[in-house]
Amino acid sequence: MKLKLIVFICLFGLISCSGYLELHLQSSYKQSANVNISSSSKNEKSRIIQVELSPKKRFNVTRIPIKFDRIYNITIKCGESKEEGDIKCDRISNFSFSTGLTETTIVSSVIPNLGLLSPAAVARPLNGIRVIIGCDENWFGTKCDIFCDVRKTKKSGKSCNFHGISSCSNEFTGPKCDRKIDSKTCKCENNGKCIDSSPKPVCECSRAFRGDKCEKKQLSASLSSHYKGDFWNFRMTFWQLIFSNLVENQLAEVKESEAWETINKILGNSSETPFANRPSDTAAFPFTGSVDLDATNIE
Image 1 (cartoon, helix red, strand yellow):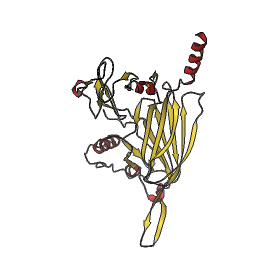
Image 2 (cartoon, rainbow, N blue to C red; image 1 turned 30 degrees about the vertical axis):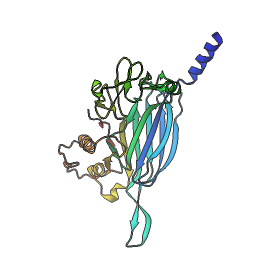
Image 3 (cartoon, one colour; image 1 turned 180 degrees about the vertical axis):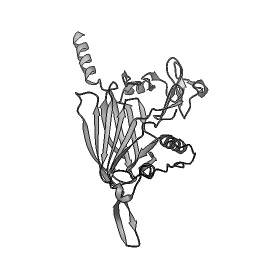
Image 4 (tube, rainbow, N blue to C red; image 1 turned 90 degrees about the horizontal axis):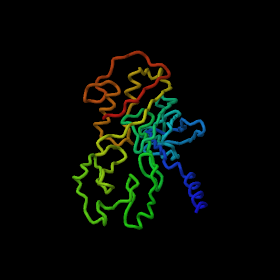
């Protein structure tokens, strides 16, 4: 018995890492990018991934194991951005031309929280960025530290809910799973589902929301963008750079109006029309610059 206990403890130690970070990127341009993911732990090696982005194609960069007591830094360095298209009058197809951006670095600091992390606004050359924090199979809870055997539970006619509790499926509850759950019991918001749990039914939220009633949006990750390019030839001013390169995040699970509200909030606009209060700053923008998109969450 003692030997079995020791073996169990050893095996449990091997699977102590039960959560993951998954990064998705999307761009309107054909370009290369280097992604570096590092953690606050000096003992954990950085992961460097090289990707080739192309228009209208979401790229699942990677999925890495994480620990919830660490901070993860994501650095995305994009090369020259080239836009593709067709010129019919010259009978030239598959051409590309430079956008003026020779180098863009996007930096994000992520404190792992189960769910979806994506700002409403993102800076070009990307038009989509999304970080998913999830649990590995058979692990549940806000820190993926609760074990529930999915296959074993399924054989008993039940399922593991997001708390890692063996519960009734198909919106039923009770000792014999024979009572239909009244959705009014939970009063879930934002398309949350009322599911069986102990001691009473609870709201199961989508990745974009959190809270007892799914009433809160997921916190966004800190995000900043740093630019380098031939802006002098384009006679680009500081505000022209900001307004021409800030776009709605195509991978964010927010409504369009909320996205514009966030973008206007970042830029200090008061009008309901996006970019209406454009500042009259005509100073020439230097060869390098940055825009901080930390304030991307609206409560």
